[in-house]
Amino acid sequence: MKMGSKTIYLNSITLLVLCMVNLACKKSKGVFTDPAPIQQPPVVIVPEAPPTLSAVKDMLVDKNSSDETAALFYNLKKISKSNILFGHQDDTKRGYGWANEQQYPGVSRERSDVKEVTGAYPAVYGHDFLHIANFADGAWYDYEKQVAHDLTVDAYNRGGINTYAWHYANPVSKGGFYWNDSPVEAVSQIIPGGSYNATYKNSLKEVADFAKGLIGADGKLIPVIFRPFHEFDGDWFWWGASHCTPDQYKALYQFTVTYLRDSLGVHNFLYAWSPDKNFTTEGQYLQRYPGDAYVDVVGTDNYGDVTSGSDLSIAAQKLKLVSDYAIAKKKVAALTETGLQNLSMTNWYTQKLLKILQYQNIDLAYVLVWANTTNAFWTPYPGHAAVGDFQQFKSNPYIIFNDKLPNVYKIQ
Image (cartoon, rainbow, N blue to C red):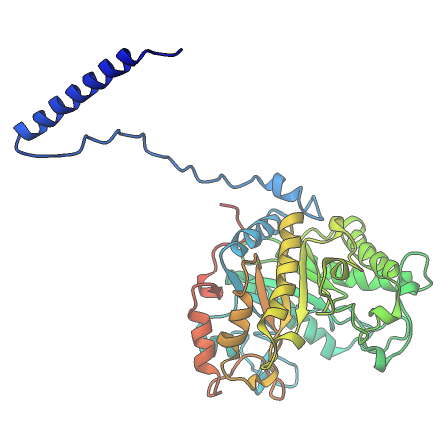
C-alpha cells in the first residue's frame, strides 16, 4: 500500500525522537554502550552415533563376518578420515641380520627393526600364505606355518592388525609363483570347469584351516585382511595380465572369495584387491576389478612412482583415485605395498612418502612397506643413516604406529 508524504514525515520525526531519548538514557549513566546483544540459544553438536554391527556387516563381502572383523572394517574407514596406519611386512618375522626361521633358533618373537628404532611396533603386520598353502611339506614348512600362526596371534594380542598376501606357487606346474620360473598357464585351469579346480580347492582349504585356527588371548577369532592375486596388471606372476583374460582373473578372484566364505565357512576375512601402479584413470584401475560384492579393501602397490627422483604428484594422483573410489563405494582404501629399497634416500620417509600421502585430501587407512632382510631392507635398522628421519616420520601426528592405535576390534 502506498503512503503519503505526510505519513512518511511523521514517522521519521517519531524515529528521531526515540533515538534521542535512547541516547540520553545511556549518557545519563555516564557510560555510552551498545545495546545488549540478542541472546541466541547455544548450538548443541550431537556426535554421530556409531552404526550397529549389523549395519556394518551389510557393507561387507561377508554378511556373516565375525563381530571383530566388522569392527575392524568400520574402524579402518573411521581412521582413514584423519590419519593413516603404518605397516611393515614380516615385521617380527625377519629383519636386518636376523630371522625367525628354523635354521636360526632362539630368535625372539618380540624382535622388530621398527620397534628397535622407534620404540613402537607398526600398527599393521604383513604376512604371507606362501609356506602355509603350498605343494611341499616337511619339518621346515611345519615350522613356517607355526611361526606365522604365533606371530599373527602376537600382533593381535598387542592390538595390531594382520594382513596376508599370497605368493601362491603355480598349482598346475607345482613350480614357483613367478612366471619366468614356471611359465605354465594356470588361471583357466583352476577356476570352475578347469581340470585343476580340485587342486585349487585343496589349497583354499589349507588357507581356511589356518585362518580358523587363529585365536587371540581373548578367545576371539582373529580378523585378517586377505589380499590374494595382487599386482595382476603386471606380467611377473602366473596370474598376471598376459597369462589370463580379464574375465578369467575376475572369475578366479570371485571363486576364491565365495569358496572360502560359503563352502569353507571362513568369517574372519576382509578381502583386499590391489593392482600395481599401471593405471592413470578409474577405467584402467577397474579393468580387472571382480566387483564390489567381492572386495572390502581397494588398494594399490606402488614402488616405481615413489623413488627418490619421482614426481610426488604422480603417485599422489593414483592414491586419490583409489581413495575416491573407496569413498564412493563404501570401501576401505590402502597403499598396500610400497617402499624404497635399502633407503638410498635417507630422508625418504618424511620428504617422499609422507608428502605423497598428504599431497591431496585422501582417505587412506594404511600404508605398508616391504620386509627387511640383510640385503634388501625397507625400514632403517639401528645405526642406519635414515634412523632420524624415520623417527621424525613416526612422530608426525598423521601417522599411527601400534603405540597410538585405538581398539580397532570394537565399535565405539
